[in-house]
Amino acid sequence: MEQATFTEALLDPARKAPPGLSGPGGHPAVRRFDVYRNNVAVGLTDALRSAFPVVRKLVGDAFFDAMAGEALRRHPPRDPLMMHYGADMPAFLEHFPPAAGLPYLPDVARLELALRRAYHAADAEPVAPDALQAIPAPALGVVRLKLAPSVSVVASRYPVVSIWRANMVAGAPPVRPGAEAALVTRPGFDPQVDPLAPEGLRFVEALRDGLPLEAAADHAGGHIGDTLGLLLSRHAVVEIAT
Image 1 (cartoon, one colour):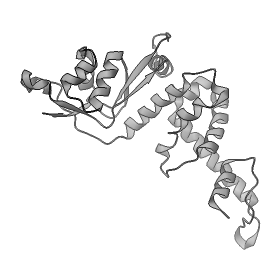
Image 2: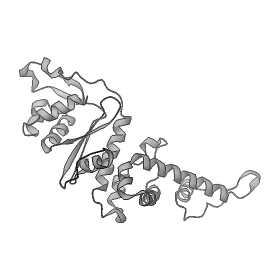
Image 3: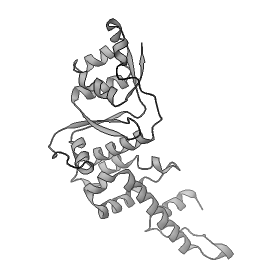
Image 4: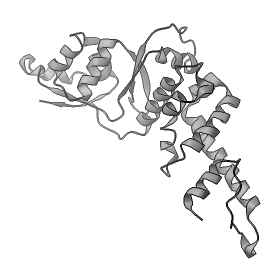
């Protein structure tokens, strides 16, 4: 029996059990396979539920579970670690017609993935919040700020930060239409989401690309004070290279 045939049958309840399965004593193992298949589907669906709580809340449990069943058939696990499962969800949602009425859903999934990656990212000791003050002004422009492994940004045409907050934070302000970008960090042990202005997004992306501080500031139009302060307060800078 080919492994691909077994995997396809395992992830699709509409398929018959692969031929030739036998249990103890050589008896047919069709029922055993069905039980195993159900357990696998439940386990993978639970993994997706845990990874995408806001997506699940937005579409409802029944819709999410049906969607997860289709997602796991199209994108079976490629890694034995379940903390990595679901990386294909944003791309899946972009091509899942029943979810077309919620065009922001893929970006919400991207934000939730970024939070999960931040949670599991390697630890890194942050610089002191006042570390830049010790550098002479003439040298500031050429320093490079290394960001923590947990740091990422998610840019969207939709109010992705507001949508996430409305479903995760009690008393969050109402969602207003418009593009938003998110900064994901992990000060301490808990990932955090902060909104980024367009210039802040450009600044963080420039730092991530390795640009010196002055060049990164120019890339952002010079307006970096708030974003730089946010990065330092969120323990997102782990090295200042001179």
